[in-house]
Image (cartoon, rainbow, N blue to C red; front, side, top):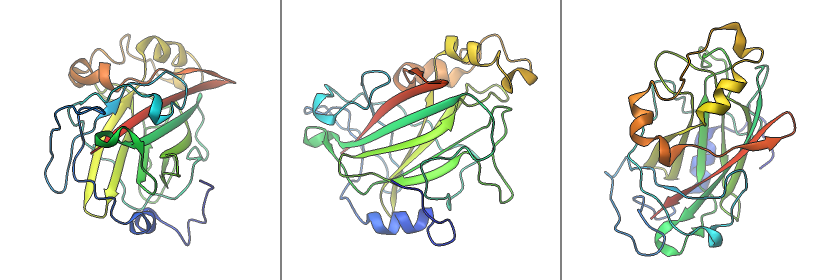
Length: 239
């Protein structure tokens, strides 16, 4: 999962290398739950319950929990750089994000070679655009179905609960997009610190967002302290 030269490798190259995993939809259970199929070109994200702050091994995950699709949002860029550290020059509280992709219909077996994109806003609520690449990256899952990204706690913008976007590509024509949130008490603490404190944060960064109210329980990370920042994990189940 080492960073790659952006001049020779892009998200499209990762997606081509991933090939077809034979995955067409996401499931609602690792032990025979009722699946909910998506359309051929878009499917629904299905996070799995996991111990907060640890990269839980798929065999130890008891169940997958189906969640409604959150959508990719308006800031997705197809050609993100292949790398684990996406911070670049952005200031903020460090967040180490461990993601695991598993085959929900086959006992949560880890899936290798799955392309995973992440992107988010910086501490001041801005996304990279017009050729900028900060806080965007992609990787392919390793033999354990894992990828890890070094990022920062996202800032807030508009009326939206702060989040990290995740898009998973089982193959060249199938994708699943979702958003991962952070606990509101953690956000309030972080937003008192520089550079977040350069803007007056909302009193309730999450609960003012109707989408968080509907889906937040299933999609909120459980970060633990990790050096000067936090570490969190999340497992996504594919059928």
